[in-house]
Figure 1: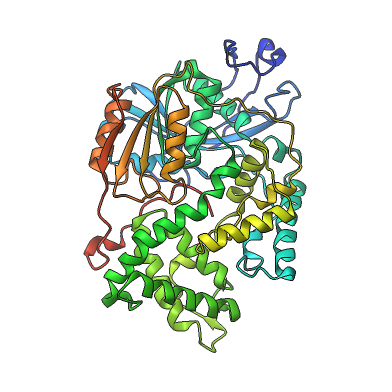
Figure 2: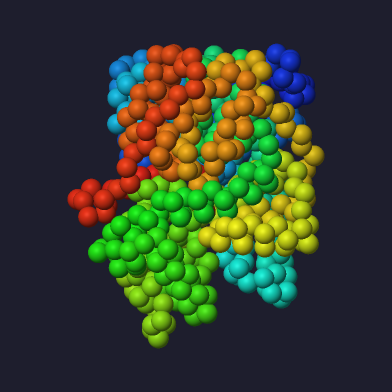
Length: 505
C-alpha cells in the first residue's frame, strides 16, 4: 500500500516564510504523488501515503514525515470535487471515516471522500507519550492534600513523558503544521479548492484551514463545533458543564425509562445514586477483569463520559453500569464476561491530542490555580468536572507559536451544524464561534444531544448539508432541524452502533 514517494519542493517554497493572511499563498510545485491501492486494513476504501515536510517552517532541511490517507471514490464516475474529512479529537485518526458516508448516495455519487490520519496519529508518522495516561493514575474527586499532589505530579509527568518520548516531532504536531499538510494534500489531489466535513476538533481544524488558505475553500461543514475563536483551555473547561447537562437531561432519564431492562431505578435520580454508590465501591475496591484491565471509579466515569457522545452508545453504557453495580462487591479478583464498553484505547491519538492542544494556544494555570479550578468545576459538574484534561499543558514546554485568529474575513460561507445538548462542544461555544466568524451559517438541531450529527440518521440535517456541498446551495440565514429520538434498547436494532467522533479518550 505504501509506495516509495519521491519528495521535492520548489525553491520558491523553500525560501518562503509562512505567509500572512493578506498575502497570496505560494503554490509549491511538488514532485510527488499519491499511489492509490486497495486498503489492506479497511475494506471498501483505497489507501495511499504522501510525504510532507517534518517542519513547514524549515522545509528545506531534508526531514520528512508520512501522512496516510484513504479515498472513497464516487459511484457516479468523475468526481465533481474532493471532500476532506476529520473525526476530531484533536488527534483522532480518520482513514476509516469515509465509510460513514458510504450510504449517503447524493454525496458519494458526486464527490470523492478523503480520510486522513493527521500527523502524529494512526498510520501516519506517530508521536507517543510512552503509553502514559495520567487521567487513570488517581481519582480526581479525592481532593486530599496527598492525592491532589499526586494528581498534578501525574499531569506534570504526562507532559514530561510526551515531550521526552515524542522528541522534536512533538513540537511540530500542531494546527499550523497540519493545515499545511492538508493543503499539500489538496494539491496532490489536483484540486484548486476542496470541501471539508469536520467533527468536533475537526471544526477547529477546518476553521483554521479556512483562515490560512481562504482561497482554497469550497464548501466547509463544521459539525459539533468547538469555539474555534478562543483557546483550547476555554474549550476543555466547558467539558464538565456540557457532559453534566447531557448526563442528567438525556442519559439518566433514558436509563430509568428502561428499568425493566437495566434495573437501575425508575427515575433519573435513582439511577444517578446507583452510579454514585457503584463508583464509591469501585474506588475502594477496584475490579480486575479477565485480561488484566482494572476497573475503578475513574474507569466507570470514563465509560459513562464516552457514552454521552452518542445516543447509540447509551445501551452499552447502561449495560456496563448495571453489570458493575452487581459485581462491584464481589470477592472474585478476576472477572470474565465484562461488557465491551470497558475496553482500552490507543496512545498515539492521546499523544496527538496533547501535542495539538498544548502547542496551539497558551495555558494560564499553575498547580495552585489548577487545584482551585478543579474543585470548583467538580462541585458543579460531578460526572466530569473534576477531570482537567488539559492540566498537562500547565507543565508543557510550549514552542513559540502564534496562530492566526479565525475571523471568517475573506472566507466563503461555511455551514456549522450543532445539537443543543452536545456534551463535548456545548451549544454556547458554537454560538460564540458563529457570532465571531463572518459569513457562517448555523444549523441548530433541537432536542438533540449527539456529538456528531451529519451522516448519523437525521434526514433534515443530511439534506441541508448535501444541498450545500453537492449543489452549492448556501443557506440565506440560520436554520433549525429537529433531533432524532433516543433509541429503544428493546427493539431489534438497538445493538446497532455508530462511529465515534470527538475526543479519542
